[in-house]
Image (cartoon, rainbow, N blue to C red; front, side):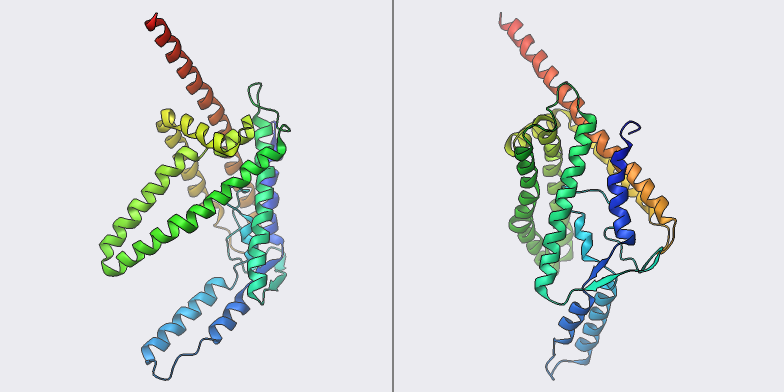
Length: 307
């Protein structure tokens, strides 16, 4: 990090945009949608009051939420502290805002911001992999098109899994939860456990693509092969990284909207998250080397025993 301080600029500049830049709101569109809903005369007073409370809560929640938050794309993206923070004012005063008025603008904004966020995330990961490369890794400029397409496959696969597997599973668990809450709680627990168990072996897919030029399929295979024999250490590393980021985020979120102390929060968040991103690449390089040496040793021992 000391020799590659420019890496911290990615999350710093990213969050500065959310702190000072224009915000794209949907409050008016949601309000129009709510106003267009007309209940029949037979609707009870309780139903009308419940609807009023729900609609007021929805408007209050979305009042300061900006669609530019979708710039923080997953799983490829630049880490951000303020992407999803519904801020009322900036340190310079009131935000410049744009109210989206149609569903077309709404979906276009989501797709546009997500695409830009993915491209910025790719650039950030390329910069990190360039900083940590060694003699055993591939040149960062080699096979750029293949690396980009392989990285693009990551969010596409995540979207497909979410739409065709997670969404039906969540819908089914919601039905169980309506019938018997304990079944819903058990269902959500096992779903979360399954998602975590299946995600951890794939966590280094992007690392292998960037460092060793693998295509998407080969990178997935390599990530699984490296994580399985190092599952304990990998889980500890991920736990430490997630917990450190999660806990420190409480500290970074303390300054109120409009406070210049948010600049300190942005710097602190950038240092912590960038450090763990860099550490994850070094962790994967060492884990890959260790696993390969272990397999080579086992192969040599087997050959000696057979002789």
